[in-house]
Length: 348
Image 1 (spheres, rainbow, N blue to C red):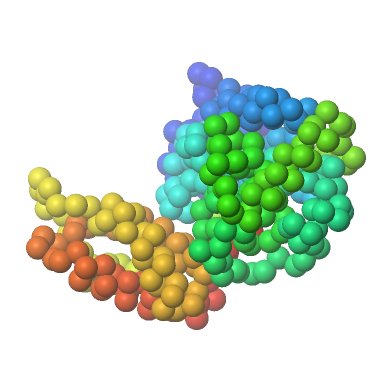
Image 2: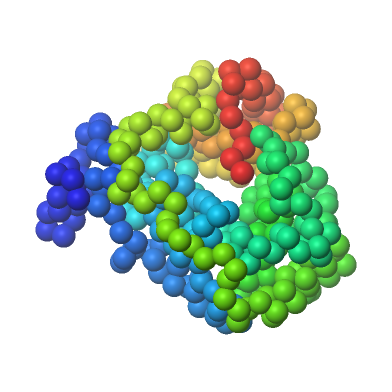
């Protein structure tokens, strides 16, 4: 561990540092491990789920910069911020959400990534039936995708109809639904074309469940100890990538639609209102602008964070339908403005 991360009373010294100082710390000097963390417990739960499902293979898991499964080194990279509460707080402050930050969301992502790891470890995408059902894994990933919300050709697991993004994602999502205990996929997807994919995964896992993988993980894909980048550099790059480095561009419009909180204010929080109406707004604005769900969802996440920071409240007496329409118009304008600024929408 570098000098910046020496521990005090069992806790890393940086856990009490102010944000400005913390951002100057190199990632390799964080001294993080999975041991004893909530995500380690989730990984053990994944191991048990695989065992109960008859799958012997357990992908290796390590801390990385983001959720990722390298095709040539099957295994699961878990974002480093999940290894410490202080880093999760930093992630939320700078990225407005913590992907995998709850037990439920962490398990959903682990099951999804396990599907990727098993696909790559056993080279399942080379099988003709796999290709017939899911498509070709070699298909280039799109920069963005426009899913069909009404389609029953795909399972529903992660948000924004992620199974429709790419054949690899389709398989990973199908595997995750198949694996989840108590999912009752046979009845949940009865009558859906997606049921054929689930039945195929079920047959496939019975075939290879006790086998050793064809491709073995040789080493982790860039251990944290080799990343010399500072946390500040890491987040600057990510915020530019997602267009979050100018989040305050939404403040003026938010203040027009919502009102500043007053002492003992009992009105609904604007951030809660936006979360409650998220799904409807995504649908309406997506139809108006012909943009993808991830596009609108990313902007709503930023607006929720800004509304929370500014302590905005829903105006009393404003008809719900009227406010929803005005927010949708504002969101549509901001969506197109973000696109013109070169913001990136979808991470696949």
